Image (cartoon, rainbow, N blue to C red; front, side, top):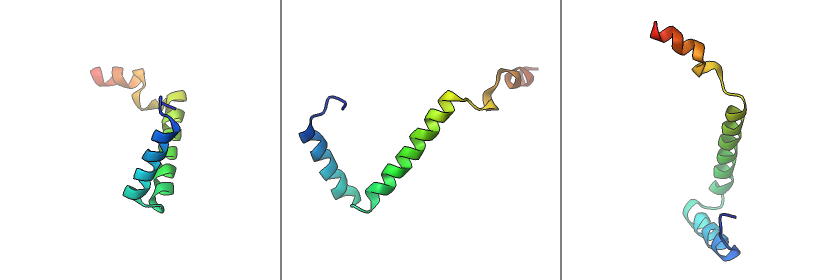
Length: 60
């Protein structure tokens, strides 16, 4: 995983628990998961907000 060994991952996890606390970690993970899920969905199915037809209308 990103070229990190188990020792480095363990140290990062311990530091994260010390900084954020054990109750905040699941909330952060959930928020990150929702953000990544939304990003993936938007990449697969872009919204119509930036469609080429709209850009042409604004140039006129």
